[in-house]
Every structure is written in structure tokens, then in C-alpha cells.
Image (cartoon, rainbow, N blue to C red; front, side):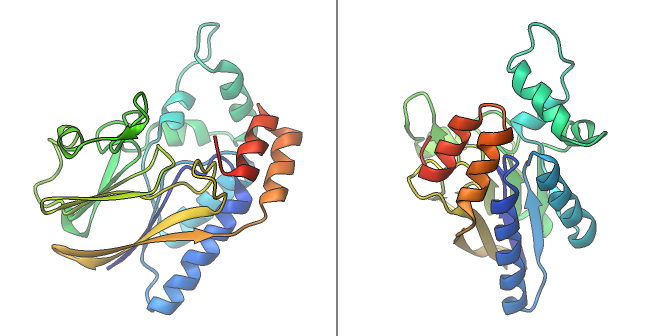
Length: 239
């Protein structure tokens, strides 16, 4: 079985289109379409691409932290209200309700592969990255967040931290697939993950894809909420 996993699109349609083309090229080389897992995306065109993938390719989706925010009623005290108002204005009717009700995790390959955004049980918690301490978590810290994983699980894939990482803990492989947009390691290329295997044996390949970064940055400067900061991160690959 081949599984393509990508997430943290953040409305970057240029990066997402490049990732989609690379996935399709790999599918042709492999002779199989595989399955894709989408985490979250924003802006009208990025949403349209993800909708096409869902309808035409049967992609499965999980709920991200911003997806949960989009399901909240807007009030004076709502955190990041300006950003949410902008997002609601970008997305078509029904999109916010759709993403806010997505499952936190999905199981593939008979439960051997589990995918979530932050962890399989939280859209907000970081599975591998300790954000406060700016370091990778220990194996024990990681496993503390996976106590309710399916017994058949051999691979757990998440996103959220925008940092590619692979960790082997006993028989369990834990992976952060990286981010389609908003890189943090100094390389602005888009990222996605290709899994191939079955049962207890899986191969993971981190994919990095070039795209029209300047077009994405220029759009962010002209249209996005907090556009100058967004454009700077897109160009530099650093937060």
C-alpha cells in the first residue's frame, strides 16, 4: 500500500498545487494512486484544490487546530478573531462547518497507520516537538501522548509543528510529515510524506518540492491577514 500524507497547507495554493503534481507523478511511477491524507488548508483556491482531491481521489481528512477555531462562534473575546473573520471571508459557505467536524484521527491499512494533526487525540498538542523548550521530546514523552493508540498501530503520522522528523520507538515509527507551507528550517520548499508498506513493515520517504514562492509571497502581502509576516516566512523558510 502507498499512502501520501500532507498537511499545514495554510492557504498556499501554489505550494499545494506543486505537492499535488509531485504526488501524482509518484503515483504514476508506482503504478498505483495510493491514498492521501489532508490536514488543513485555507484560502478559496487552496480549498478548491483540496475539495477536488477529496472528490476525485478519495482523500481522507483530519481536523487541525485552526479547523477547530473555525467552528467557534465569533465574539468580542474570541481569540484571534481578526484572523478568523478573514478566513470566514475567504472560504465558501459550509467550509468552516465541514472542517470543524472532521475526525481527530484516521486509521489506514487495518489500523497499522494512524494519522492525526497534533496527536491522534488532539489537534493542539505537539507529539514530537516541545514548543516551550524548543527541543524534540523524549521517547517517553512521545509515548505518553500515544497511550490510546490502536494496538495494531505500527506508524503514527502527524503535522502541526512544521518540522519533519522520524523516530523509531520499539516497534512503533512516529513521523512528522512536515508542512506544505510556512517552513521553519530555512528551506522554503513544500513538503509531503510518502509511505509504502503493509503490516509491520513500512518505508517512509520525505518529499520536498519547489514551487513559485514569490507568487505565493506576493499574494500574501496583497491579500492575507498579517501578510507581510506571512510573506517573509514563505520567502525565507523561517518563522
